[in-house]
Image 1 (spheres, helix red, strand yellow):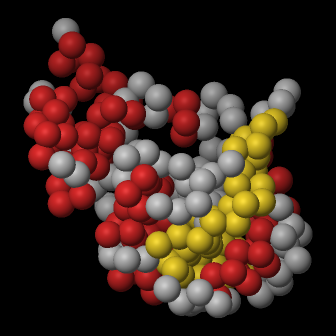
Image 2 (tube, helix red, strand yellow; image 1 turned 90 degrees about the vertical axis):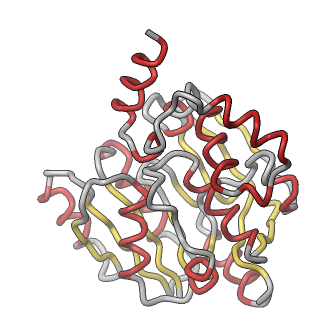
Amino acid sequence: MISVIMVYHKQKKYVEEAINSVLAQTYKNFELLLLNAGNNDFDFIEDISKKDKRIKHVEVKPLGSTFARTEGVKLSDREYIVFLDPDDKIEPEFLKRTYKELSKRNKYGFCYTDSIFFSETQSRRMIQPDYNFFNLINQNYICYCSLIRKKDWLDAGGYNLNNRNYFEDYEGWIRLGRKGFYGYHIPEPLFLYREHKESMTSKTSDFGGIYKSFIIRWYPELYPTHLQDMVNKTLKNIPNNFMSLTPEKQEETIVKINA
């Protein structure tokens, strides 16, 4: 019933933990699509793939997480999908609890839980509020790892492939919500997000305002006119393809603009 889609690139240090958290699920009717997006350690990946027949190893082009995850959705023949990064984990009840709630609520497009943000030295619970689309378009409060009804995801357009991997999950929730596919919240911390210097929260902190501005520009029907005016000022000198650039190219672009 469920495809867990994991894009693997550099995170060899953590990927086995992530995979083991999937294999430890109390809900057993799943497949794990392990997508190699440019890692050359094939022996390591093949060894992991042999751990369980539900693991399928596929190579994809290293064009960013939105492309790789979209390829994973195409490969999935299941009714539900879950995106899980190789440095994060899910609690053993994650699939069982989210599937139980979403499968009986046809009017909802996805089901999300509270989270634990953890590092080598500390952890803290992050409480995600109950779903409200009007609050969501102003600020994201839903972690990327949720159980999604695949049909609704595809009907909403899936990922925006012009957005390489910046706020792409937030944009995904907006794309679902504007089509009427809302989220159901389970107030239990069943997703574990690892904080480290390579995590996406660290990478997007410098350009978050620019990323959000592009989202407002792309969905003008959701935001008031005065915000569009502010966005036009913010993005005045920013190229239209900024969201499709690599982090390195984005930094080069900003340096040139500020020079």
